[in-house]
Image (cartoon, rainbow, N blue to C red; front, side, top):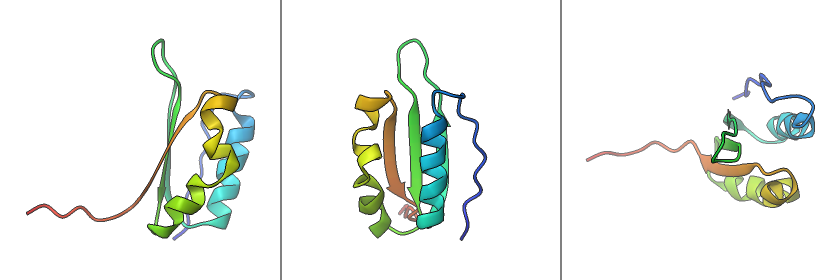
Length: 87
């Protein structure tokens, strides 16, 4: 599965982030990436959804993910595209 990347990050402040996310989609099977802009009370959020559960740890181990909130104020959320089972 190939992720479709359409960067809508404000430029130039998140240009480096956009490039790192694009590189991530080339290295791992990423289902989706969502960006929620900052507002008066919250910093920006990036949600990364991987295809495989094992890739969550790989993404979270990236230095730019671990240090994201300290370096550029972005909060990262990483999860995998598992099916939810409702009984």
